[in-house]
Structures are given as C-alpha cells and as structure tokens.
Amino acid sequence: MLDADARHRDAVCKGLGELGLLQVLAAGTLPDVKSMAVERAVDLIIVDGRGFEDLAREQGKRVLSNPLIGDGTPGILLSADTSRVMVHEAHNAGYRAVVALPFSPRLLYRRIGSILQRARRIHRQGGASVLGAPEN
Image 1 (cartoon, rainbow, N blue to C red):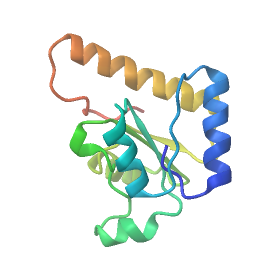
Image 2 (cartoon, rainbow, N blue to C red; image 1 turned 90 degrees about the vertical axis):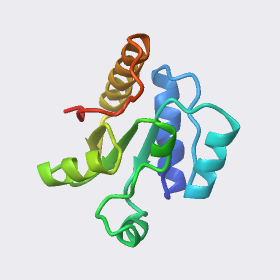
Image 3 (tube, rainbow, N blue to C red; image 1 turned 45 degrees about the vertical axis):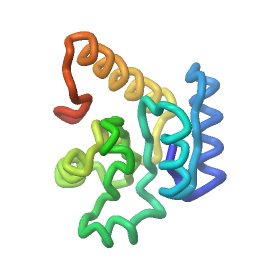
C-alpha cells in the first residue's frame, strides 16, 4: 500500500489484516514501494492518491501512475473523485479499480479479492497481462 499519510496507511493495513489478508506491506514514498517490490513479489498495489498530486502533475496527469505497472502488478486507486473521467484516467494510469474515499474496508477487501481472482484466472488461461477492463 502506498499512502503518504502514515496514520491512515497503518489503519488501512491493520483493517485489511483483520479481514484476512495475510501480508500487507506499507510504504509512504515511491522509492520505498519500489524497493519492497524488488525484495518480494507483490500481488497488488493500493495507492491513496492524496499526497501524490504533485507527482501526478509532474507526469502531466491528474492521477499518479501505478508505480508497479512495469511489473504487470495490478493496482487500486483510492480517490475522493470517482467520476467517469477520473475512473478512465485511473485505468489509463494502470489501475484496475477506483475505490471512493472514504471507503469501507469490506468493499476494498472485496475489490482486492475480485482483482486477484481475475489475475489467477488469466494466469491459468495462459494470459500475459493482468491489466484489462477496469473493475466497476
């Protein structure tokens, strides 16, 4: 999970752990998340877009690109803006889903499950890419 706010990041990781996720790694910066991905396999990245607006603008976008898109790692963007335009931009930035802030931990947990299930299904069928149509 990439989130600039340490208290929010810790609370979300704790909540996801209580719902049954075995291991949730947390990072506050892009270099931290990228080094974690080098050290171990990452199945999915969750990015809280708040706090990264300046980096997104540096990329010429409204949404920070999925920092692990090059590895084919699917992502979920947490955003207060869930308009069709934002969802489209998030998909183009490498995210499989956008979850509205504030969010229900159970909703996020279900979204994580559906993305990972789809990734496993594609892998079993011999598909190369996890990315595809965004989750609604």
